[in-house]
Figure 1 (cartoon, rainbow, N blue to C red):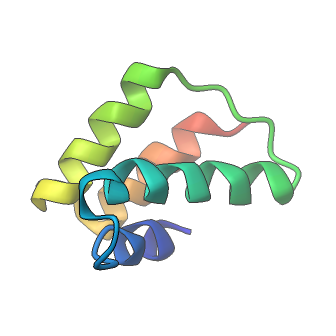
Figure 2: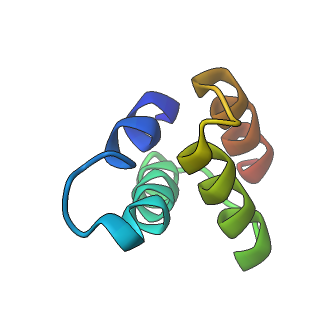
Figure 3: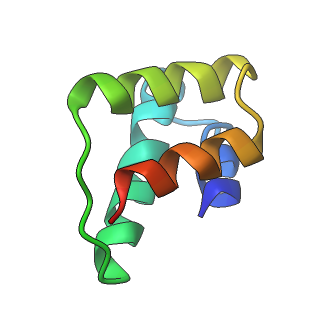
Length: 70
């Protein structure tokens, strides 16, 4: 899941919204797998920014996604 999010960040188009798109896909995958997802728009935005800038590794992303799901 985290690797998918990280990969989707670098899809060429639409570049401006790739980070948000990647987080939305990760969220949808969590929900589709039966996880109850609890997060806020701010948490999604913050994760997208950290992942896009490279400040969050795939392990950091996975840790944050686990925090979102219960």
